[in-house]
Amino acid sequence: MRKIKNLEYSDGKILLLDQTRLPLREEYIVTDDYERIAEAIEKLEIRGAPAIGLAAAFACALSLRNIEQNHESEFRKAVERLRKTRPTAVNLFWALDRMENKFRKCTEIENVYESLIEEAEQIFEEDRQMCERIAGNGLQLFSKVSRVLTHCNTGALVSGGGGTAFYIIQKAFESGLVDHVYADETRPLLQGSRLTAYELDKSGIPFSIITDSSAAFVMKYVGIDLIVVGADRIALNGDTANKIGTYNLAVLAKYHNVPFYIAAPSSTIDKNCFNGNSIDIEFRSGDEIRTINGHLVTRPDFNAYSPAFDITPNELISGIITEENLFKPPYKF
Ligand code: MRU
Image (cartoon, rainbow, N blue to C red; front, side, top):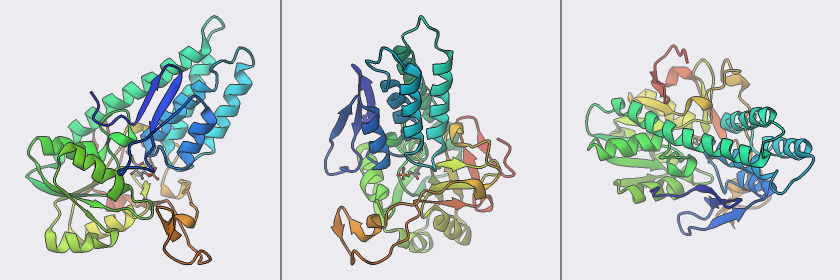
């Protein structure tokens, strides 16, 4: 039984836990409309690299629900729309490519809609299993009971299973290897103070939310044994795109001698990217900085600059954990 139900397909509809409402309200979006799912991805109602891929996989299958003819044009329209939702997480494109492959292989006698739903469910199940293997591989990071710091949100909310970096922390906690977790609040959209805190609370792990700007203080005066974060896209040389602020954290970790690890499924490694320079970074509306929860905190005419992700250079990363292995530099995935 999943503690957190973030995404579920049932009876021709998809349920998405609306992450913009958490942790104050647990509300579900229920829809069979791929356009509504595309909007949910854009608005971060569903978010986190693996979950974006999962939602997109179900969305392009749903584009063919109740369609008797012109399968191909409906399907292509949906895939093209979904490809435009968010540019950085490669899992989105990986999942859509896989759904396109499945579509091409469907024979005339098959019910295309059902075959595509089966493929999306298969991706979901594989993701769940990958989370288990990532967490298993990640346990070797803990040589003693540790204080851990993390950024953004990487647990059950972002995957078909327990998540990536978060799940490693959760499994380590269950093995008595985690003393306390410090969760960066993750400005501007507060994935840390809203979502990671929600997951830590559900898992019974002792934690403190900190402002992003407290990280150096906490490393120096509290003492952090390990930092583990997720990824939206990993280049072949190990350069890693993740939530804005990850790069700051990696620089601080180097200065304070704190091991800094990335955890992600291998679908986050982009075999077409040789280094971080070719990763497409999403820029979001300045309103997300000028407001908090819809309330203006500065003047609406003040200019804001809002990259949603940054790229941590490989030399700041101690290692990358996937479902296959713990990779150390120089990276050979
Ligand atoms: O903009 P978001 O909230 O989708 O960004 C999410 C992150 O940066 C996560 O750290 C990343 O997707 C890994 S989730 C396992």
